Length: 599
Image 1 (cartoon, rainbow, N blue to C red):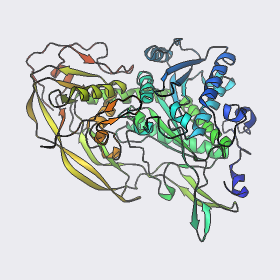
Image 2 (cartoon, helix red, strand yellow; image 1 turned 180 degrees about the vertical axis):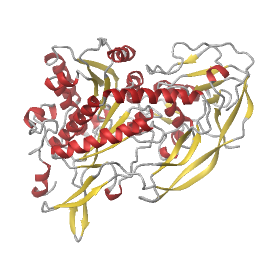
Image 3 (cartoon, helix red, strand yellow; image 1 turned 90 degrees about the horizontal axis):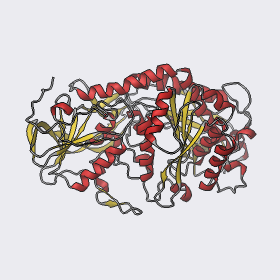
Image 4 (spheres, rainbow, N blue to C red; image 1 turned 60 degrees about the horizontal axis):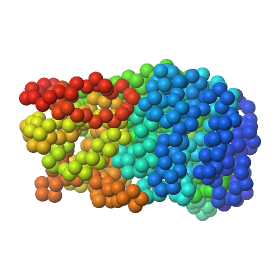
């Protein structure tokens, strides 16, 4: 708890709707369960509250049928529903959950798709409450107007079991927001199944950050930071430049302007005066969706460990940020739609033809030379409520690659070097990433390069901004040679929308994901780990102890679907995006192969 003088800065008094300039009607907005039910200081919206709230909106506030409720699946332990709500004024959406049919209807409708997800971390409750506030607004006059221009998807609670326990992880202990590339959590598979079909142009990822702490300054305690909300966009150098530019120059610039106009104190998602764009860890949601060239936008309010303290202001902060993003999406819909479509097609095209100039970044750094085109103010408060303003600050962006590797046209895993169990696990991951793959038959020979483990790799992260020594590892490539896959192999071509995600999963030494099981090899810390609920094992690809070779090869010949044809079977990750060859891939018989060499 803070002093009354500090608390006075965190009420809802004086908040403004930046779209109209009028005062927010706080009483009308706070009609979600956490505010309408008689909750104690440690209580928030329960799963029963959430289900009841959504059911009531569907029944009593949905006369024109704009609100469509779908259950993505049930949680592993408590069997709670994982709801997804689709708001659309025109799309001919199915009554029952069918992700392919939903995607087809939304794509045929032609409007931009905005996706907002909340409470992947259940101990960040204002994120979910803000989602519910927006949901109710979409059922009213606000929705009538915005749904003329966009379709909106809301996932208010991604982790219901964890919410019941009010913990950061799932019931089984998996942090879902460090799991997007490995997908250990069943609930995240549900989310990915919907995402890979729908492929929204804009993703809003709602979170809360560690609650305000106190630090010593000049012999007295001060609030460590006094801002309400933080934001940054996905900005990996693996993302399309135009998509990154729209995210930063329009969405981010506009939301910081709008939040300031509303009376909120907003800041970059970083650390004090040396905020750095850290959105390159690929197993984290905002970075993961960016790899698909969605405009991916992180929102954080200060609420972990805060319970209900300042809950109204925190929840309204999420609402105001989401509404700003929706306005920007509407104002720039044609430009966004074109940029995202072109970016996704570019990934397909790059993946089909080997180009030594085209590289994937596996270790980003921020030089300090590139900063955001907007600034925010770093605010603190003394215990007597006096504001300390450290002035306007920009955020340093990750702007160069410390390590990169030429993009291959395919990755190959031979059946005689790994167990059937590991192949099954790799296929499961690919299926849930919307990635296609196929098999080549026994005796297939191809020119390939094998990955191998070199050793530890130490580097100075962000040397000109916030230098710290980081220890990871480094892999290398053996010289290209003709290899015969005696028992056949799994082939993952790169000419598909999921190409960036595939690279960040199969390149062994993606230092950006250091510390997590971001790649198949980085997952070795979980070798033989077992889900305590399902008893499922999570077995990563590991290197051979004797020669340090990984059972992963890269293929650098153009158009592997033709030059390295399938044996008559293929796996389809099920994306409704524009992947090359969907529904049209001709499965060729095994014949002597003639390779088109690298250019």
